[in-house]
Each structure stands twice: as structure tokens, then as C-alpha cells.
Image (tube, rainbow, N blue to C red; front, side, top):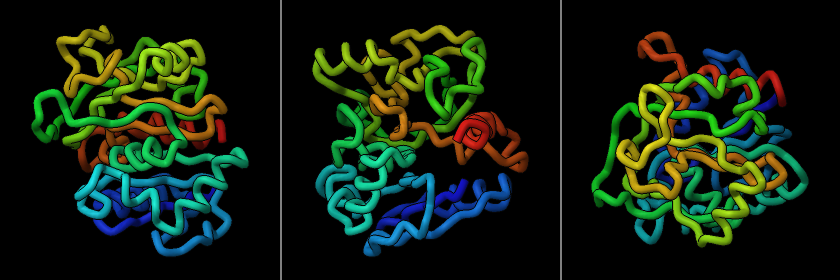
Length: 228
């Protein structure tokens, strides 16, 4: 599988993602600049975390207008894989590739810490090889990570098994008391109906290097590689 990692002005996790994919997982990676439209033959596009265009309007609202996004949207509509991490998740919702929106955390504060994550099902390329009885320690770093959608959209997301991950405690209990940002149903990540567009707020690329003494994120990447 050939990956393409997009860099927007203000992206700050693009190099982290490239390092994990290229140096740690030994995958082919293309660097994609936001002003370009050529995806360079990449099969799997990654929109990384950061603060695209400074988040001056709404997180992801300006990035969705970048030239590269027309190609990313076309790629997704043709069934190609696209994954957005943190700011990338925000770009995907702003672009209409994923349902809902990411609002300000209910604390109105930026949150940067490790959290426990639980896969909601095994119906996605990124969760297929994960254990539903295991929690994964993955960092979050966001000010606008509260997933929100209208009631009918939430029902559809549930009915179609589109929830990828939920925030949980150490024992895997999904409880409002450990919800870090106020997301509906403790949602930390979702997919589209087809399953080829993925979005999540936590950063698995920050938990995939033994130097950091946390490799829980590697399981997510290995699931993608094994099932892509």
C-alpha cells in the first residue's frame, strides 16, 4: 500500500506521520502539498493533525478549500482510502466526507494527555484486527474535539456501525465521567458508510515508536496494513 500525507499551512503532525509510516512501518510515502492536485498514485491518503491555516475561521474550514482537497474528495468518492487525524478529522467533516462536526471542548480548554480508547466494532480496516476487550492508550491534543451531530445522524451512525472508537476508562467502560471533551456517546472516531473514509481525534502516530515507551498505536496501523 502506498500512502500520501498531505501538508497544509499549519500542519504540525505531518512529519510524525511520515516518520511512523516510512521509518517504523517501512511503507512507501508520498509528500503531498496542499496547493497540488496530484496524489502521486497514493492508495491511502492521510490528513494529519495540526492547525491548518491557524484555525482562524473554524478548524478545517479553510483547508477544505485547498486545491489538493478536490483530488482527495474524488479519491474518496471512487472508494479510495482517506484518514484524518485530529485536524484532519475536522477537515473531513468540513468537506462533507464524514458526518457531524467537531466543536470546542466542553471545558473550553485545549487538552493534551494520554487517554484510553476502545474500538466500537471490527467492521473497519483500522479496527478489524483490534480486540474489543482491549483498551489502547493513545494521546489526544485538541481544543475542538467534541463530536456533535443531529439526533437522526447519530442514529444513522449507530445503525450503520460507523463509530470507530470511543473514549473509555482503563477497564473499557464507556462512561460520561471519563469523556475528555464532551463528545456525544464518547465518540473519538467515525467512518463513512462505505468504510473507506476514517476520522479520529486521538493521535496513533504519537504512540507507535518504542522510544516513546508506548506502541499501542501500532496495532491500528498494522490493522490497516493487514486489511488494505
